[in-house]
Figure 1 (cartoon, rainbow, N blue to C red):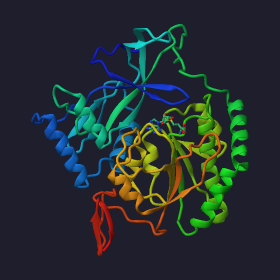
Figure 2 (figure 1 turned 135 degrees about the horizontal axis):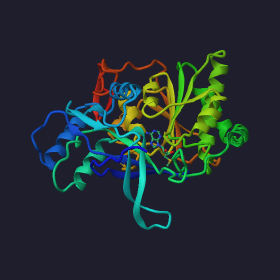
Figure 3 (figure 1 turned 60 degrees about the vertical axis):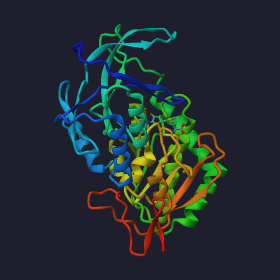
Length: 398
Ligand SMILES: C[S@@+](CC[C@H](N)C(=O)[O-])C[C@H]1O[C@@H](n2cnc3c(N)ncnc32)[C@H](O)[C@@H]1O
């Protein structure tokens, strides 16, 4: 049995969908170098100023640094280092395999202590709004992580004390491979026959003729191996429709197709491998997105739009309609997202099938020529072309 971790108590939170609820634990990091204590008001003003001046909150380099550290197979007690918005290094302790008694609500809704094991590392993403809100909640001291756009988290699983191998108790029943394969085959065929799919294909055929496309990435689609998988099945099938259309258009060029959702199980991995779809562990999906990508993300629990606006200008983005003003959600759209979307045409394809929401739009980049990122690979600060001026954060022709 793993050692008990007697350290600090983690903050627990759930990532909920119709399919299941994953429990995550976030422990606080320590600053590599101590810094002067600031007050909340100063830090909020500073975070806003960093955003307005175009400092990228998310960058592929930061994700790659985490991936490199995770690829070296850290064990309990090791540290993962990330940088915050000021350039300061934060040290996050790895707790993989450790167990802890945590106070949670049980199935009858009573609070009691249960044993959990920290099983997998992932990131949580803190866009500007979230950092500011966290400061509103924290009435005491400005925490060391006040400027951290990414935080290391662990998924926490309940081990089955009765079983010798102490296997984890799944939070939702995972389907058998054959049943899941059959179910996905049926649901993707139904999608292909739907009127929505026809509308979708006709938009692609009529609008996207010259955009070079090299890969397709779906974020937060859910799991086809869990119950209530209509959304996941249709969103995954839609990505396969994009690939089939590209195969026709580009004379059989192979287009890799990836999915990133921590909800994915080994059964998802196996079944979707037969469809040549690869499941990527968080945060590896972001590294695949560039100006030759198609990105899909519907109702994610992570700020996909804010992240993409900082790191790439995909050829096509399929996601909820971007509102005209800031709206707080798990996937907020702030001025950077609106600025990015000004370079895209929007197409409605009237989703009527179960599994897509009516508010899902296809955004197609106006220019087939891929825009070039800044030297550090990000799209902030925004490049201003000659003859353009900035109006409310959006460059426009003079
Ligand atoms: C509300 S559900 C939406 C699921 C589905 N797209 C739909 O339309 O119903 C949010 C999804 O975001 C996923 N998610 C959470 N963190 C993520 C991450 N870091 N990367 C990708 N997906 C993530 C959750 O696991 C969950 O499946």
